[in-house]
Length: 507
Image (cartoon, rainbow, N blue to C red):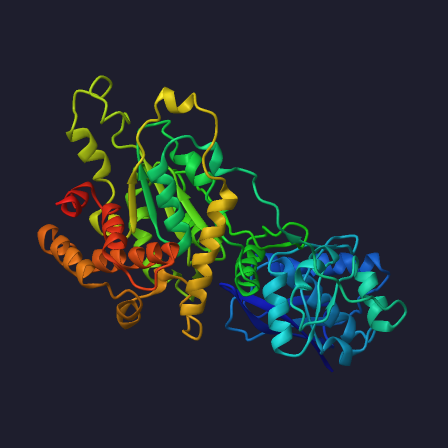
């Protein structure tokens, strides 16, 4: 008799169903696992053998074969321990084979039969719900998996508790979802003195999910401004929270099963490798761009990042997904994030200060910022200069707008965009609009059309640059409560592109 249960193998955030088959055959005693297992899966036989001994289940003197189907799909990770143990217990008739055929199981076994937490419980629960099955996972993963309400989640603490549940000795109650994390960092925009133009750019970026580049001398407040961006962003919708949490579940970042509606804010160091930023490594894990999905990716000291890493960002910024290519598979992760970057104007950082700039000015600034390629620079919707704050401003008491006041305007603009794009698949904010949709929603008035035509002709604005200006203008109009994009909206949007474009607006 072949006993069966089910588990999952992960391809990106997709959990593919895997059938775990167990057969006891005559012959020399042995325990083999087939079906393209990696080292962690192959070692499961020793953990399963020890865990069964811990609950007083003796293995027979027969040949035990575990098959993981489909056989050509790579199987990676320690979460195969529990389904292998359940299939083996069903083959030994310790538990009912019919019962374990109705579940999807995942979990790592310790040698004393405790069930250890594993990554990916949330995508596994989604897979179980789609197949109309229950999910069996470690107790530490139950609160996370229970967020998928369509799947009943059983979360035993030990293998013995799982056996008692299936035999009816002590039936476990379904797991309850974890807490919704809703606390913010407490950093307020009111703490930032001066920098009114940069704060305005931050508000526009948050309202339309536009990419923002801040350039300024060291200590001018670039990182301080970026750190306060999460405080003005609206919370994620339930669908966005679940989508983002699935990625964080695979990365093991969910805290005690709690799902957060706060948008992620990722700030990798400039020494991070390409695999750390875009994903890859063993198991093609998600990178920072995917962990920032529906949130913010903040790259401080942008020119210090590897040129190869920066160029790799160009495609994910445009498409909203990243493909990690491997010889045997192509793994896709969503990565629709807002890119916020900060940079000094040159290596020493004091290019604009003649008394402190190095002797190579201005060529040192051109060389330093030249590390950022033109195509990547063109992908920043907003580019703002952050000048040093004078002592007079620093000595003033804090009296700027609070994050709550700015967040209210951002939320109102986002609601306008949600209504505008309702029913349009894949479109959520102005930054997503392109082609005919952009022409429809951001058609300027006559004066605005004349202004953007003059700017495009005089300064050779690229097609991508033109579209980004119109998206930003649409967001500014939303913040202004205007149904039509007008000349002042376009003028402000253009002013955030380049210093020379501000001259065109003034002219």
